[in-house]
Image (cartoon, rainbow, N blue to C red; front, side, top):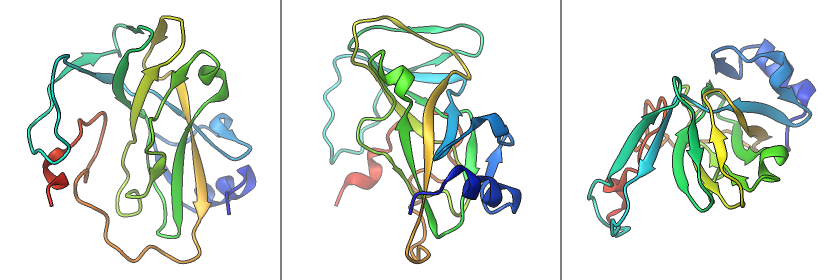
Length: 182
């Protein structure tokens, strides 16, 4: 069951859902919470060949957008993160979605990984896979409202411990390919 604004407000009020910094009530929407872009981007360096079962480190350029905006060209892909970190109980899983307004410009904020399921042990940010699939140059600015966080109540609590691959995640983090090997 997807939680409504009323349920989200109640869970935040009881401390069962926590945001850092504290969630501004204006960001609670009918079925989720609006999230904002963090202060740094990772720009993938071109001409790298990536094997999915490799533990090789992928090369990125880190860009600080807290002082200067970044222009995302049509077709360009970057990694960002949410400004907010959050923690939920074990019986709630989150989904990250783009906002309709920015989607109408051709800005996608996640490629395929919409489920956020490791935030029950600790507060974490969410890495955004940002792609400009539209015809415009889009200016990315720190704290721009880019995404929505949707909360779904699970049938039972999650029993498994979270993967440690991204434990302690604060800000934008490159893919950790080390755990891909079998």
